[in-house]
Structures are given as C-alpha cells and as structure tokens.
Image (cartoon, rainbow, N blue to C red; front, side):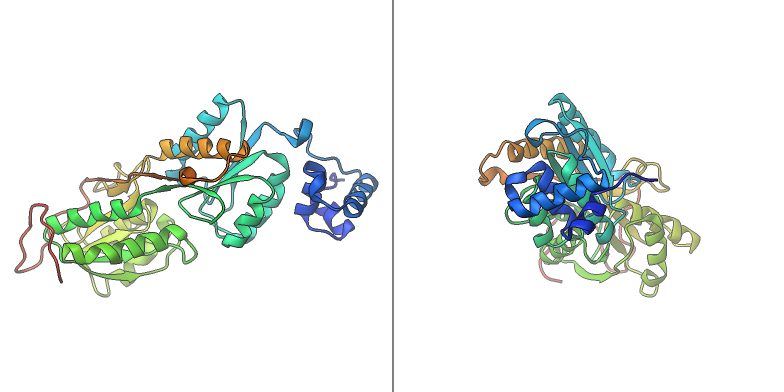
Length: 341
C-alpha cells in the first residue's frame, strides 16, 4: 500500500494541496481552524511532512523547473544553477513539466513544500498562477517577466538584430519565422522583435506555425514551408531548426544554397549538423548562475528593485546553414542597414 500524499490530505480535509503545504511549512499563513483540521486529517491518514524540511521550514533545497530535460539547450543552464547552488550549500531538485500546463501545476504543488525556492523556465501558467506560487516560496522566472517576481532573461531583440543584419548582409530581402508553441512567452518575444527589427534591414517578414519545440516539429514544418519556399528562415529553437534541416534534405532542398536557416539556442550538437547550424546563442551557464544569485536575493527577503530583472546578451554564431541569397537582381551588402522594403 502506498503512503498517503499531500493530495490525499488535501482531498480529505477539503482544501487545496498548497494549503496543506502552508499548514506544515508556514503555519502562520493558514487559519488556526483550517490548520488544526489539516493536521488531524494528516495524523489519521498517517501522512508525514517532507523529511528534508528542517527547522523553521527551511529545507536547504532549491528547484529548477524546465519544460523538457531532453532539450540540450537546458544543459548549460542546469549546470550553472547547480554549481552556484551547491557552492552555497543547497541541494538541487530538477523537475520536468513536459511542456504541459497540467503537469506544471502538479510539479509545483509537489515541490513547493520541499524546497526553499525555485527557478522556472518555459512556464505555461498564467502570470496569476506564477504569482500564486511566488506567494509560497521564493521564485525566479527565466525568459519571462511576471510582475512581482525576479527575472533572468536573454536580450532577444539584440539576438534577432544580429540575425537579421547577417541575412541582409548576404543579400536576403525576406525572412520567414517558424514559430514555436502558442503559449510560449519566448516565442512571442522573438516574433515581436522580428517585426520591430525587420524594417531597419529592408526585410519583409511572414510567419508559419505554431509547431512543437522538437526536431519532429521542425520536420513537420517543412511541408508548409515549401508551399511558398522562402530564401531564409528564422526558427523558434535549434531542435526545430535541426528537424527542418533533415526535412529539407529529404525534400531535395539545399541548405544554404536554396534556403538559409537560423536557429535559437546554440545547443550541443548544433555544430554537428549537416550543414552546421547558424544560431542565436545565449550564455546559458551564466544564466543559470545569475538565476541562483537572484533566487538567493529572493530567499533572503531582499526588497525588489532595479536589479530584479537581469538581462544577458545574445550573440550570433555563424556556421554553414546561411549563405548568399540566390535571388535574381540582388547582391550581398557588407553589413549595410537598409530601410524600407
């Protein structure tokens, strides 16, 4: 027979799992009558609060919540966060939400009682949902601004600018954006940055998608892309871009001879593709370190100020998947900025 869980206690007591969590970790945040009922039900069921919780509700554990642990873009992020946390005497709990809002809610309910703070990236929950989580534990968002929480993010606009300057310099006059998941905050930022920057470089833009943020998503995008083949594409992330490289090769389309491809992330393996992938890279390990530093500020109760948002610079890594535009009547311009379209 399995031991009782926080969900069993919540159901029997007629409260939410987060209320059960507060009753054990922050009893002052729960009404006396409710807390007494929760503890009585817990005792009857034989439920015991998380064993790693120490005095005053401290656990010496912090969590990182990611949408896909198999995506190599998160490896540097996790390493940076874990190294910084370990140096400060914390154990790291890693949780995978599998790009699911339902799974993310479940993950947060389960880990909030077990950690002193958490860092969340790729969240599908609303701002209200994230602020609710932040009401229980110190919380830092990655690549998303939620009012009332600390944020570490990549300067998306700078990365998009670098990508478009590169394409314009190769003679391209249009670019298609291959979008990621609809609910992705990062996807929205990339698309808005592209719309804002394109006129400065004389580029017309269009969009296809949304597509899953996976290699399979990239392969699936090829069919629609080739209905009106573009000369250049900017892709939501490297996994989608790598999937597109495979799909384009199977369709007999040359990269970069026929289409130039730029991804986002500079993941491990992006330079092993055929051709190697040009991509907008971010200092992911430094991002993980900065995330823990911000989490420490939050856990210490430091007041929010101008340091609540940390922005790290993106950079373009040029490899073999981008080349001179093969469009009649155009010539490459060496880094020139064109206006109009």
